Image (tube, rainbow, N blue to C red):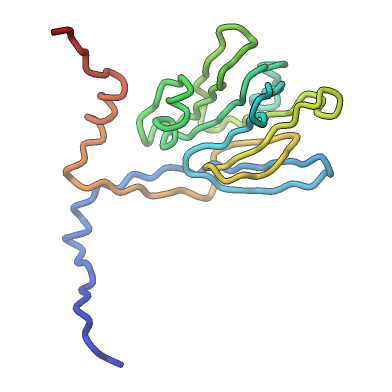
Length: 192
């Protein structure tokens, strides 16, 4: 007891080296067929998808207005700015800078409506995914929040949390704007 183990508490000067960005968390509410609900928080994204080998049929509402009455796709995702450079980007969405007050909505392997890929939404938007008649169509959807499985669901509602945020710290050597530019403008490879 009382033995010095060589651990020093970081000084405030050392902590000042970091650039800290605040990013609101996503508040995710899912509903199940039995009428129960579950709430989760997510830093990056929340999505629904069909089980392997199927196609989901999903109604998408934004602020209680049906925007896509029938999306036929592998799934659909809502991302925060922090999550827009990950899974959302790989699905075809344009990433947004960390700290940008916006949500990204993107479909995965969209079959219908033809040509729809993604949308950027206001930060106060609420997005709802609803499985279109899961009992007759036999097309279940699975819910996820930051990759955590939420099980077979019938609906998911996502909005920015009004009370919770994550702080993301970067070391001075990490240039977030340069990395973001690389994502948007990949280097051109020339033949040789």
